[in-house]
Structures are given as C-alpha cells and as structure tokens.
Image (cartoon, rainbow over all chains, first blue to last red; front, side, top):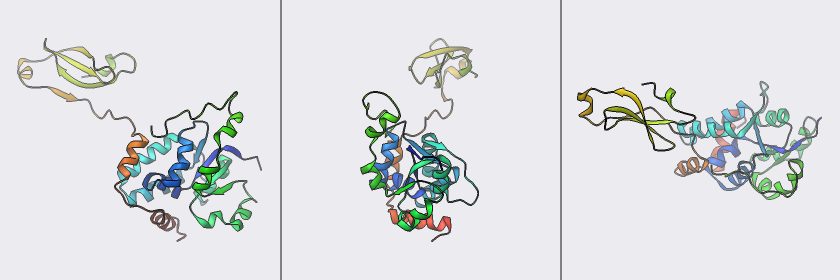
Amino acid sequence: MADPNPLRVVADADVLAADLLVGGPARDALDVLRSHSWVELVATDALLDDCEAVVATLATPELAAAHRTKLDDLRFRVDQPTGDHPALASAYNGNAAHLLSFNPKLRRAKAGAALRKHLDVSVKHPRGFASLFDPERLWPEVGDGEYPGPDRDPRD
Amino acid sequence: VDAASELPGEEVALALEVGTDGQLEVELAHTGGRVAVGKSLAPSVLRRPAFYCLGPLSSPMRWADLFAEAEEYEVTVGDIETELAERRGDG
C-alpha cells in the first residue's frame, strides 16, 4: 500500500452538497481546497453524479449542473470501479490521505479498522478537517521558503 | 457574420451594431472597443436600431454566485444525508 498523499482530499457527496446548500463546516473545509491550488480535491465521476443528483432534488437541476461544472474544474479526476462506494473509490484510486464525510457510519472506529486493510485514509467530519488541516505545515512538501499563504480566491 | 474569426487574440465579440458610416461593427467584450467588419448594410436596416447578441458569453459562475443562488433553499445536512442514502440504497 503506497503512502497516502497528505495534499489529496476526498469530500463525499454529502459534504460537496452541503458546501453549496448549507455552508458551515462543509464550506470551511472546502474553502481550504479552493484557496490552495496545491491541495487537491479528488473525485470520481460517480461521486460528482451523486452530488449532482442530491442538489438537483433539493434545489434545481440548473443549480446542480452549474455546481457540477465548478467541481469538475476543481477536482483531480480518478477512475470509478463499478460497484465501489464513490468516496472510497476516490480515496483509493487517488491515494488521498483525507476523506470528509458527515456519515457517522464511515467515521466509526470499526469502519476505520476495516478500511485500513485496503487503504490508508483518515475519515473526518468536515469540522475536524477545517480545524486540523494546516497548509502552512504541509507547504515544505510543495515549495521552498516560507509558506506564501493562500494562492486562490475561494469565491472565484 | 463570421466576425469572430477576424478578431485578434482572445478578444470576444459582444455584439454587432451599425456604425455611423453604415458599416457593421463588433463590440469587444474585453475592451469595450469596436471593430468594423467590412459589411455594409442596406438603408432599410440602418433606419432601425440594430443590436445583435452573438450568443451566450457567460463565463462559468463564480463560487460566490453559486452560494448566493443556493441561499434561497432551506436545506439541512440531514436532508442531504437522507437523499444520498436513498440514492445509494443504504437508507
């Protein structure tokens, strides 16, 4: 099993949809990715399909499609094996170190132990990720010198 | 009118309009300037206002625009969880 990439993050469809429709911790977490071009959001097409379907149901298909377009621009795309859980497939194929989810089943210790047999990913509530993830500490993996701060406008 | 092909670089045609000399002009979205495209129009056309949009020029929405549009929907994380669980068949 390869070492997970600490700069790669998967947000499950619930977090992606909540970023748009609810705000709060989901948006705080995704803002970290939006404001740092070198922190990558990893997602399969199936993961974006799930998010788009949820947003289309709870808001409108037009808003869901516009959101999908923005996510498409932001994400690093990886393949989706048939039948796999979209978020776990994204983490596995994208070698992501972090998986953000509101689903308590995924965040239970028992689930973590089962997952570790196949992939080394830390499943976190978006609030935990937003408060613990420190781009400044990870900057030496990316560039030289002092951490320059965010390099993108998270609202652009 | 295939005006776009005559425009330099990354300029984007915003609209077509009749210039004072009867030539069709293209207004450029980036600069607001105008370029004549060498098409003379008939007097009957010149008598009425002419302003033709060349099509959608919108760039992808900004995140800020998306969030603003989403504000009108009162959605909770619980609503999202329920929908997602139903879609994935693990409700």
